[in-house]
Length: 431
Image (cartoon, rainbow, N blue to C red; front, top):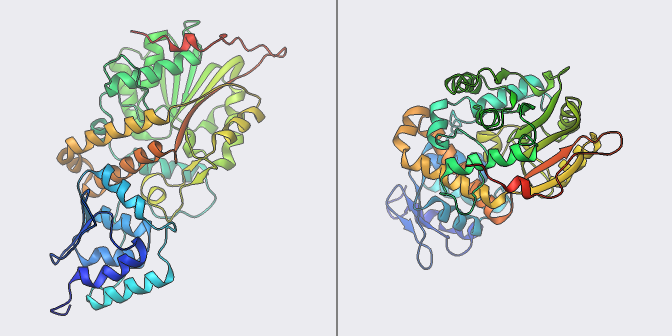
C-alpha cells in the first residue's frame, strides 16, 4: 500500500457506488482510517484485515459479508439490531454486487495489496449437498448441522424452558420467556382439545427437547409420543422426561415423520418443524399425519411463513450457515395443502410480533453469557447465532417473515368436527 493511500480512501468510491454518498454506519479499517456517516452513527462496522475484503471479492454480496463476520474479520460495534436495521436501509436491492461495483472492489483491493487467493470458508459453514432435496439422508444431515451443536449451548440461548420456537407473551403475566413459552404450549394443548378429555394420545412431530410433550402430559394427562431426527435432542429429552417422572406417559423416539405408520392418535402438534419439510414434500407430510388421526382428530401446524414463499438458497447466509435446505411456505399454501390432505382448516393465528420478542430475548441471553457460549461452540458458531437471530427478529418486526398456527380437524363422514363455538376456551390460561 502506498504511503499516501489509506484503506478508507481506496474504498470510498466503491462505497459510493454501492451504498450511496455516505454509509449508514461508521466504517473503521485495519489501518486506522475511517469513513463516517452524515449525522449520528448508530455504531461502527470494523473491517479488521484484508481477509475481509477477499471474502467479499470471491463471494460478492450476502455470503461474502457473512463469511467475513463469522470469521471475525468484520465486526459490529454497537447495538446489533440498530446497526442491522441501518445497514438494511442502504443495502443494494440485488444481493450480489453489480459488474461495475465488483470491478471497483477488485481494483481497490489490488491497490491495497490485499488481492489474494480465495480464502477458505469458515468451518461453521455447511457445504452444498448433491442429490434431491429432502431425502431422508439429506434431511438428517441438515438437521444435525443445526440442532446437534450442543445441548448446553441451546440451554444458554433458550433458557430453562428449552423451547426453540416462538413464545406467546400474555398481557398481565410476568413477561419472562419461560412463562411465555409455557403459555404457547398451553395454547397449543387447548387448540388440540387436550383439556376436553384427559388421557388423549398426542403425537408431537419435531419434539425438540421434549418441552411440549412434557407440558401436555403433566398438565392434561396426555399420553405423548415425541419424534425427532436429532440424536442430541433425543438424549436430553429422554433424560428430562425421566427427571420429571413422566416416563410412563411420554415416549421420545429417534424417528423421521415418514416412519410413522400404523398408529392412531387423537391429536398432533408440529411446532417449528415444518420449515424443514419443503414444498415438494408438503403433500406427503400432511397425508402422513392425516392417516394417523382418528375422525375428529386435530392437527396444529406451527411454522414460520413467508409471503409468496421462499427457499433458503445455497448462496444465502441462512441457507449456508443456519438452515440448510430450509423452505418457508406462504401460509395460504399451507392451508391449501392441509385441505387437499383431507383436513378442515378451522383456525389460523399469526404470532409474528411474539416471535420478534422471543428472538430479542434469545439474543440477550447469548450476549449476556457470550464468553460461556464461545467456550461451548467456538466464536464462529456463536457469531452465526447472534447474526441470524438478530436479523430474524427484524424480519418478523417488518413483516418480511411471518409465523402462523394453522389448526386442522379430520371431519367425520357427516362433516362433524366437535369444535368449540368460539376461541374463548383456548384463551383460558392455566395457573
